[in-house]
Length: 151
Image 1 (cartoon, rainbow, N blue to C red):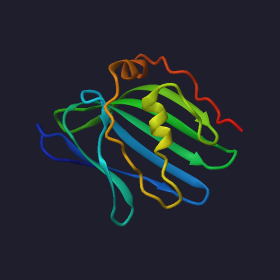
Image 2 (image 1 turned 60 degrees about the vertical axis):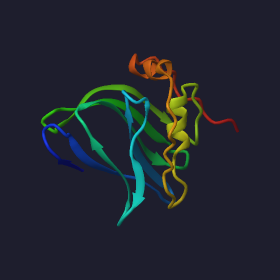
Image 3 (image 1 turned 90 degrees about the horizontal axis):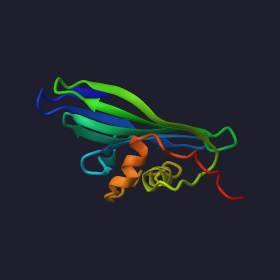
Image 4 (image 1 turned 60 degrees about the horizontal axis):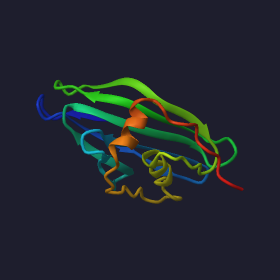
């Protein structure tokens, strides 16, 4: 998953994603400094998003689960890339379980949920720059639970 690319240049990582008949999983890294999603999705032997991360702190958004009533889990972790090229998980800022495609008032979290790729599809990462207020809400751990989709 990770490869050191120099003490001052950080680390290179690749996060695989997929959406299959019943199951899906994906993870993305969010830049605290730039207030936007990083990486580009591409297809090699599998679908993946590749990153060259410099020493700093980032948010790691991850979801994994089923498309049916069993639902899925969603986690947001604060991570740090050290100057030695190590990745450390510092703190879990949000964790919830959901079914379907829930909504959320925080635009960053709502966009992450909406990015779920379709069946054998590609992940489309927007180039949106979010507000500091939206980011601070996540960093302070003040997110409300996910709202189930309307029937």
